[in-house]
Length: 157
Image (cartoon, rainbow, N blue to C red):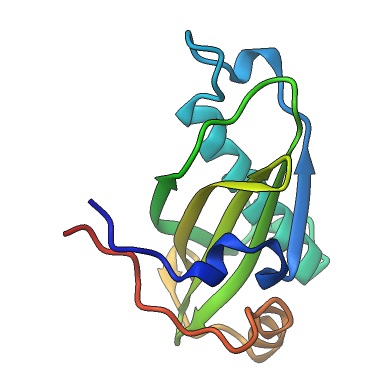
């Protein structure tokens, strides 16, 4: 069981970045709920879109790009059921910025109700090895910071 999350993480206004996604028929499970794989994909899409928004670079996702941002850890909490065909809104913000990595928080909303939380750790690499986040990259991350928020990582108990 995961520790109780900060109540601010359940509020859309906490997060600086938003991505709206239309759900698809194939996102449903046998019980007509949004399935876990689709939900993980929504979070992934929001992380990628935020990266594109911050960096204004499209080459991060090219196989031959020397520098990449890699997902090294992700934790998802399912708080409620989601349903097709209602769209979802994924809100995302940066929490902690370290030397070569950063932690972000995400919340999944449907009909203005938070139905899930995600915490992810990303690492900045050059030629496959972690390196210090460059100054301009650090400024981009700061632009998406969750203001006045400092959390402990989600942990299982």
